[in-house]
Image (cartoon, rainbow, N blue to C red; front, side, top):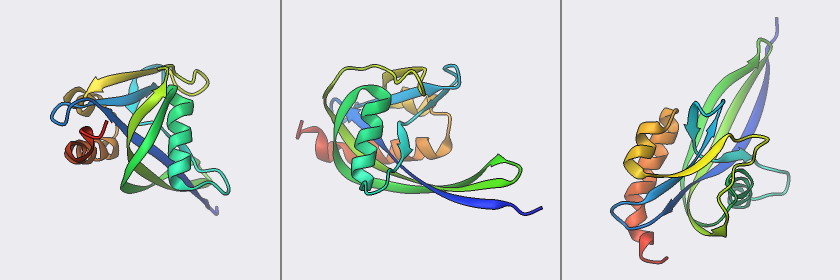
Length: 147
């Protein structure tokens, strides 16, 4: 049996607000509210990574954001079925809110909330999200005063 490999590229954000030493993190819940993660989604044709990240964050959370810095590119593999393997890349950006209204994209997201950084790290379902949130928290003091 041959396994087909599909490469997928997504972009998303660690959206922070608040003081340099105690920011809040914007997170989404999926799988009937049992998994907390960072907002992200597939990059559209002719769309830059920062554009895709901003669009996906706004679509999933209702919050308009500005991109501050690239944080990391995550790479992982998963199977969508026995015969289809996905090679996924996700570019995460440090972002700040600039408008909008907090509301989940009900077709994909069960809930959206701001969590204190320590609680976000505790709730994050995926190790990659925890690592990127930690990285964003360390870089936040450089940007927190610019708000």
